[in-house]
Image (tube, rainbow, N blue to C red):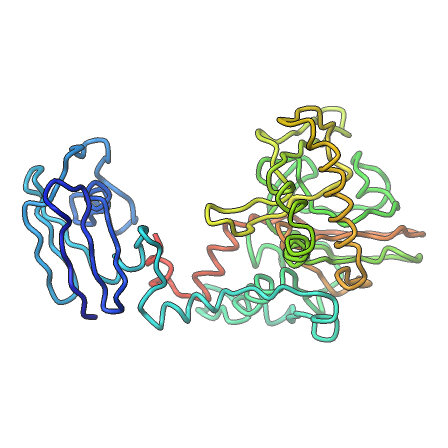
Amino acid sequence: MNFTVTATNQGNDQLELTWSDGKTSKYHYIWLRDNCHCSTCYFPTTKQKLASAATIDDHIAPKNVTVGNSDIDIVWNQEDHLSTYDFHWLRVHSYNPRLIPLSKKLKGETELLSRQLWQVADIENDLPQVEYSNVMNSSEETDNEEAIKDWSLKLWKYGFCLINNVPVTPEDTEKLCEQLNYIRPTHYGGFWDFTSDLAKADTAYTNFDISSHTDGTYWSNSPGLQLFHLLFHDGTGGTTSLVDAFKCSQILKEEYPDSYELLCRIPVPAHSAGEEKVCIQPDVPQPVFKLDSQGNLVQVRWNQSDRSTMDNWDNPDDVPRFYKAIKDWVRIISDPKNEFWYQMKPGQCLIFDNWRVFHSRSEFTGKRRLCGAYLERDDFVSRLKLLVLGREAVLDSI
């Protein structure tokens, strides 16, 4: 990779690089020194820093800059410390401005984790599915995780996935959960096996109709994934719906931009207080739409049932605007174009991304037995990236 590099004017605090595609990147000297990966500053075995940023001189600057064929050597004016920076690493971590990697390979790897936002017509005739036996025969021990990779990628791409031909037992369903990830314990327990007997004071333990929602808006860290298996039902109803909330948020932003902006901004308090010894609330109430620093949607938190009294408004004029935004939002997520109804059945599990896909359940009659679990999202995303991108590409990003 050919490019030129020049230091900024004497007395400035940044190094400027000019890349072969004509783009430029600026790096603060203190940032470069903090990210030295020599054996004194960084432990490669654990991928952890050894040096403290607090010890870096405020006026750190290069005494000498040497451009090689694939890296840059900098000798610093503090302790004559030598740091070496790989061109590829510098390009990947360019922050002023952020740049698309020059590497076609890295671009392709990034595209592998693209998501497909959907409406009913997009997925009803081609649902993401995997086979239980394939998933269970895939493991790290045999160095064959292709089936788990396929499962994880479908779950990430569409926000949900069906698993077919699962033995109709809670024990086998629990093993299926553990094949993907760790089960998250909560006040509902770890792995659930329940009926509509109000064993827990939550509407999930009734036969009521439950509108589209995400679980756990009352936790600071909402569950990442959720898996259900209908073990038995001798009545009618109980149909499940799925909604791609990311697609719906896109529609809201286009059609009702003021409502979208408000749901990105107004914090919505929530609670779980049905159990006598439980009253869970998030440390900091979150808005319906959680965005990252670039304005990209990361999570949708939506549960009408668990919303607490909203009596803390920075601007009281936002009250009627908020209720209008709710109406605009519900109109979209309940549109038949966006709400996919599916009858769960014994032997087929459903897993979905609780940060992206809403689920609901229609009222039902008869006895209905369900089992399932919450799974941690961070661990799932870690495994997904390692399986799809490979460890080398993942380490490029840290």
